[in-house]
Amino acid sequence: MESLRRVVNDPNVEITPVAEFGYGPYSPVDGEVLKASRKVAGALWPGVPVVPIMTTGATDSRHLRAVGITAYGVSVSPMTKGEALTGHVAHGPDERRPAKWLADGARYLRELTYELAR
Image (tube, rainbow, N blue to C red; front, side, top):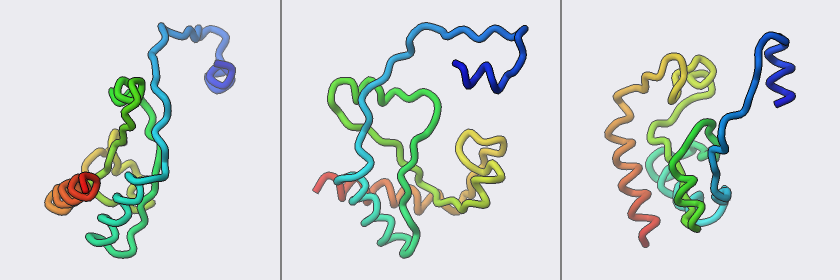
């Protein structure tokens, strides 16, 4: 709250928290899911790094995690640092993603699902 007040820096703006949103425990950023993601991505896109990130905003996965089910979001289209900086990412000011990644993205999800099921 103090950070928000400092950033807004306007005594006429009232910052009041709403009701508790709820959360679940964190899903680990290492282990079988990351290992499978790297294996599949490496086979489809050699040399492309897989980087775990924490996204902001709401996610329904908190309900799964609250009952002991680890949950992850998976991006299916690679992006460069330049694309991220210009907002060509999910929920950015220019949310478009290149259609060229649609087929490879679907293939990545299929192969990742098979790899995790093994």
